[in-house]
Image (cartoon, rainbow, N blue to C red; front, side, top):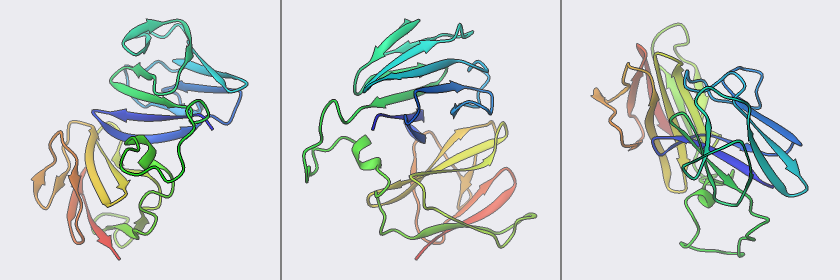
Length: 207
């Protein structure tokens, strides 16, 4: 099934299966793929499925929609095309177009390792240590879990085959890990690491 993988600065923040005939992208919360950023229009673009083909159409957005670096109005997407909306990059993957070989080893693309089963044997959670939600645990069961307050500080914890990494996604308030600010690069999490985000302390727990 075709899917779109949304990332910013190389950090994957969400993954969406194209299960509907029409999938909308934009800033407003009613879109199928919500990208909460001021550079993104309320109703920015739409993906229309025709059989196994996906057509991307720009909805007269303010800042435009780009495919592989070129501005488009409407275009047929090909496997591995990169859609750009604001600072966000959206990788279009259609495995039906290029069937994956069974048992593909290290030659698999990075996106291929982001399947729902990636790191399925890794059982981890984020435990809130301060604030109103102190004591609450958030199980890291999804490929990408975003934490924080939009507009203030948002970090994404991504499940990889060999563990979990955390990266700063947006906001002027940079998260810290064990007291050190998170830079542009993602950082591998270890059991017991303490994250602080928008004034809330959280601990990474791996079982």
